[in-house]
Amino acid sequence: MTSALDPESLARIATLHLRARGVVEGVLSGLHRSPHQGQSVEFAEHREYAPGDEIRHLDWKAYGKLDKYYVKRFEHETNLRAFLAVDASASMGYGSGAMTKLAYASTVAASLAMLLARQQDAVGLALAHGEKVDWLPPRSSPAHAVGLAELLGTASPAGGTDLTALARTLAEKAPRRSLVLVFSDLFETGGGGLEGLRQLLQLRSLKDEVAVFHVLDPAELEFPF
Image 1 (spheres, rainbow, N blue to C red):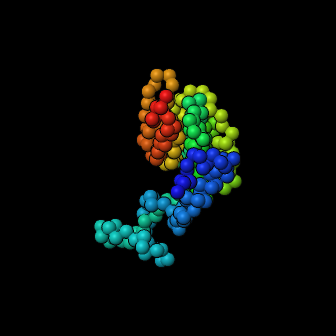
Image 2 (cartoon, rainbow, N blue to C red):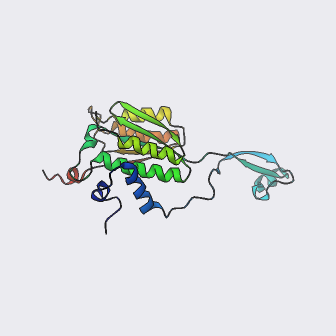
Image 3 (cartoon, rainbow, N blue to C red):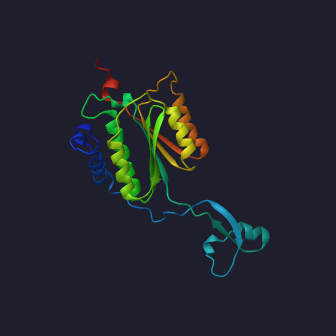
């Protein structure tokens, strides 16, 4: 059985948009939308009970202390905001098989963008070429996800890997409490080691959720040279 993310299978599909759509339809279509979208679990304030308020929001601890009925009010938040941070440096252009590392990372990122848009979540893109970072603000429409995939599909690997510049851009432009998904081979240039990765992970201190997809070619793992 061939995996839907097998590079040789994906390489047969010409455009990134169609590749990502195939992944979403073939692998992720079983996921369903949550019925609780847009509802927050963050407490905002107490307000004295008034007829018509939902009883399930009564704070019985407050009643025990004050002998009065109070209801809890909660902040209303928007849906998830996600940022796909893709390393498009020169080293991501390497590929010993059917796809380069950049092509594979772009396929996974575009697939996630389409899934997020399908769930009405906002998704944006940070495309890093060395110190230069192309920025696409987050939107939640399917058309935006298609445009994001098209931008990834035209990306050419160039420059060094500068995760520090990428982390700086995300810290400046990404709203707090966002989901940040980083796709990189982590071959950082300039003698910085994994300093850029450390700075990316420090975005967690700004209440962001950060996940790193370490993208390597099989030849870089097996070294059959």
